[in-house]
Length: 169
Image (cartoon, rainbow, N blue to C red):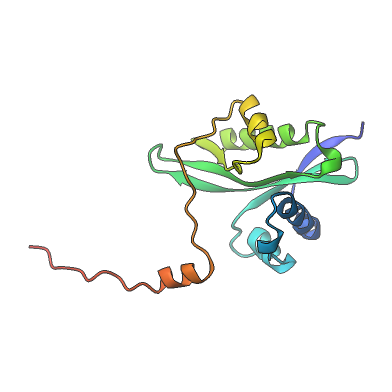
């Protein structure tokens, strides 16, 4: 078995990161909305104001997968959280513990960074992933739904005039 390791992504990894993102989009049947470019990924991860971080999973010299994450904040806990946006292991590397290792690495980062929680979303049809996450102790929260505004709807929302303020008595 090849040596497995996890490293923080570096700018030279951007082409491979984008390739992994496209692999994930294909797996999730969402290739039609995957429009990210290398320039987008480079700016988001390594620009003046990085917006996310990536861990690379390696099996020997081959990239086995990645995890893209960022910090959010829990007002109820008064602490940051770690949010996993994407976790993807290439099909030929699945079943070897690479996904589990990436999640454990992220959990350690969350603890080291004093995060109050570690969260991610999973598609409701992805029963293998749901079972895997639950086997690790994750709770799938059925009462929460993701709200999303994109494209023209986002532009319309952004253009909504503010409510007129009324003077205080």
